[in-house]
Length: 395
Image 1 (cartoon, rainbow, N blue to C red):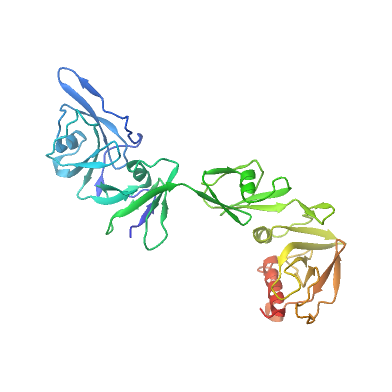
Image 2: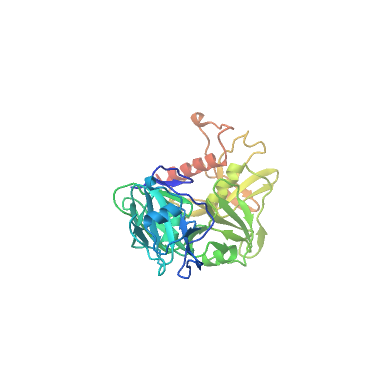
C-alpha cells in the first residue's frame, strides 16, 4: 500500500528543470512554428509539475535524445521523454525515436529518471517516470474537471480523498488506481447529516434541507475543531472546505409553553467547558436566578427506560462560588416514578422553579467521590445524575 505524504517531498528518483506557472493543455493548444531561412520550431517542455515552458528546436523531426538535450539534459542523465497527447495520455519517446512535429502538438514531459511507475486514472493507464505524484498532476493527466473529487482506490481500507496539493508515493507493488466522482461535502445541522454538492452553502438553505423552520427564532453557532464556537446568522455563507468543520448548532431563542413564549435566559455564566458540553449535547438549556438561587435548566434531558416518561427538564442548583462549592442533588420536572409502581427513595420533596414544581432527588457524593474544584464541574455532576437515574431501573 502506498504512503500518502502532505507537503513537499524530495526524492532522488527523478528531477526536473522547470518552475511552476502554466496550466494543463487542452485540445485547442498547439505549438507555434516560425519559418525563416532556417526552420525553427517551438515546443513546450515541463517537469513533474506539468508547468510548460517554450523550448526551441531547429528540426521538425527530432529524436527523443534531441528533445532531452534541448530541455537541458545531457546524455548521462537518463532523461525520460514523454509526449503529452491531447487526451492526457503519455506516449514514451525513446532516445533514438523520431517525433514528427509537423502533425503533432509538441508538448513533452522530460524528467531524469531510471524507471517508470504505473497508475490508472478513471481506468486510463499512465506510466509516470517519477516515484511521486501530486493530486494536481493526477487531475491534469486524467483531465479531471475541478468540480470533481479524486479518490485513491484502496482495498484494505476506505478510499482516500486526494487533495490537489497532496503527494502520493507510487513505490509499491501493483498499480495505483485513482478515480474521480462528483464532489460532495458533509455538514451536520443539529444532528442531521447533509451531503452537499457545492463547497459553500447558506445557513438558511442548510437548515431548510435539514428540516428546520428558519422563521423560528434561533441562536446559530458554527463549530470548527480547535476554534471557539462562532455565532452565525441565517444569511452566513459557510465554506465547507474549511478544515475541521463539525456542525451547525441550533438553540431556540424562545421556549413555548403552549400559550406564551419566553426568551432563553442566560442570567449567569458557567465555565466555558460546561457551556461547550451543553451546546454539544443538548438543543436547549438556560441559566436563571430566582430568589437568589442560581439554576441551570436542561430541557429534554433523556431518562432511561423504566420510568413513567423518557424526557424531563433537569435542574441543577449552582452555588454562587461554583466551582469552589459543589453542586449537590438534582431536580426534575415532571416528577418521575417507576413503571412498575415501586417507590423511589428520597424523592418526596419538591422545589418550585419559575413557578413549575420540580421533584428533588436527594443524591449526594460519597466520601470516596468528594467534590474537587479543580476537576469537577457540571459535566461530572451530570455523570452522577445519569448514574443515579440508571441505578433505580437497574441499568
